[in-house]
Image (cartoon, rainbow, N blue to C red; front, top):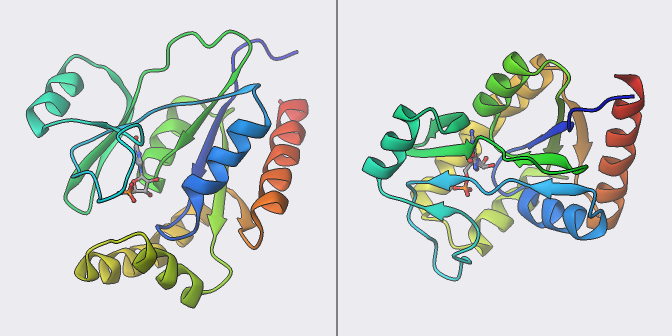
Length: 184
Ligand code: 5GP
């Protein structure tokens, strides 16, 4: 039996519906604990202040120097990082992060599971990026970054799930987690 909590990394390009799916997964399965990332990115209009711990670059870099992150990266000009998780009892840990962070987590914990979400189509992905109010110039950058991320996800041996339907996707993620747990 595995005693250490499992680390489940959920990656996928912007506009894939990652946060919505992860929120649903956590609500449905209280055995999972969602890590709250730090970022130096500006809060988007309408974005919950709970979405991240929004910090200044100085605060972020101080935390890096103190060894306070499990992983961190610079994504399109802003820092993002997962604080080192505290004890979570019996719960497994979910990190919703991009692929550079995923690689760092897998390097330090080879038993971690990587799930990579993909959008059903580029049209749907572009629509979701527009709907959430990203800057138009950032949208183009994020779409370009998507293709790189999909390649990196495959190289890292991620389980790829196409997010067609939120309930179906969360169920597929849950079965993937269970199968992984029984294989380690
Ligand atoms: P967004 O600006 O859209 O909220 O996030 C940009 C990207 O950074 C997304 O792919 C998101 O999953 C990722 N991200 C969020 N938090 C973290 C983190 O703590 N570490 C890393 N490496 N990526 C993160």
